[in-house]
Image: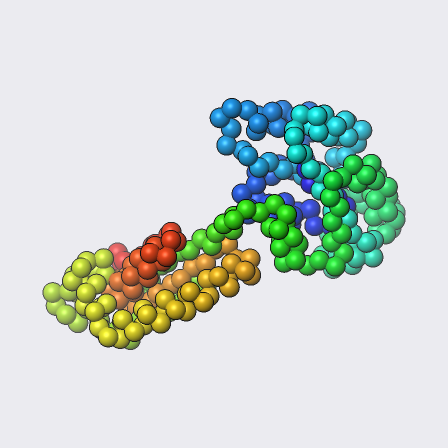
Length: 277
């Protein structure tokens, strides 16, 4: 169960749990928390990691009673409370210009202190209290991963796409590589009607020394970069390969790179944006 002061990082913590494969439910009434916990523990359930996230405006005596009941039903239930200094919370709210959920006529600092008093019974029942006053979002993510992650919980999802520069480069690509320096099958009459998915075109593009050198160096670059992207917290990466029309060279290269990634144990999503244009 995840709760804490508003602005202390509950939403970021919950998102990090979801990235690790947790099923996170926000602001669920206490009686439903117990029912969901029963379902998650029941036969045939695939929900082996469930977290309930509570905001301060959903905490009352009934919630505390629900927590007590959950503790009696769920072995290993842990309550995580995110704390933060009032000074830092004030800075966060002022920089984001978002209203405090308990905001009223009182000043921001007074509202935060009122919430702190309201949440004290839950804080006292917590198994783990994390002070986020000096944590940025990356440090909080690392803490969540260290506490609740499993090996390979943050796989880097890869997308490999081909495209034609004359149709514009894809806006969502993280790495764009120009393949127009490679031998162009368009100028070979028998290859022109074919695409980079056809073996004759693929051989024409890939068997050149230039293509082999390019792929070899690209493999080395990806071996270096992909773990670095994972360490930075990236969960999705798009590699885009372009040629003039997006039908021959870029398609063949994209397929070759995807094949190399599969040999490394990865499962890239492959698309050819302009293949049929």
